[in-house]
Length: 127
Figure: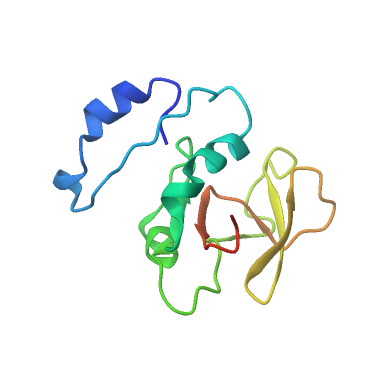
């Protein structure tokens, strides 16, 4: 998804060949809105296959990347950081999880199972 400075990102990353992957870019001219707008714009492109969603302003380690690679069954929706791993828990998005799926998500949750680290495996059910 391309928004703010998207052309610069695409110029730098190109088509992904040098990384052993294939990038496709979808432009979001409403990037000042919520993340949900970007997801909505990607909905048609994402139909039929699981999609790995990564927030562009999060640094994601290899172990989380490997955990998010689509595989059967698609039960683990995100690579999670256990509660208490961030000293800024009041600033991050929190999630509650039941049987491997996100049940609730938000910055204002008072009870949570994990902290969002910016990588999600989304299936058709999500959209």
